[in-house]
Length: 195
Image (tube, rainbow, N blue to C red; front, side, top):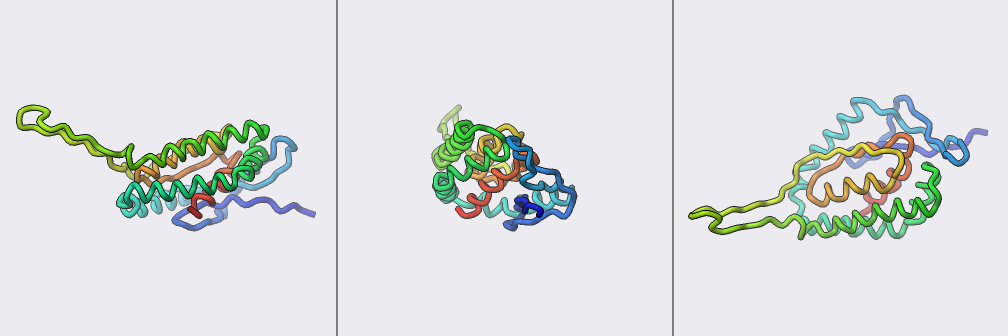
């Protein structure tokens, strides 16, 4: 009897899509068991993800920082509610002990907490009369589509170092987690989707 493997869909343009291409196995390092099949992905998959992020950018950039922070606040609460589930997923696919996985997930959540301060962090500066008849004004604006390619050794922490801050600042984000440990990143992304 064959075991049902977890799926590793791509989240593109608000939809979870399975790539029809070749896959690579995801192992539980503690047992050697194959627990999922991760799609290799294609140039078309990457282009679709970048195009979707690019299309979403104008509206997201115009979303007030306080509204973006509220979404991240809900995301943080969902992560807290599902903390042990994320920890077990992290351990299962990466081989970390539960204590190490708790640290991995917790450090990532701390960055989400930091990103909640974005309304203050994005405030600009003004210096009147910097020189005779010259005022100086500095504003902080989103850049556009940001991309993160993450390693296998910290499946939760490293992605969470990247996209919460980028998203809080009004950017859109394309994340490519390691094909060796995609499951925790997918579980976290599903929580973000609910926020």
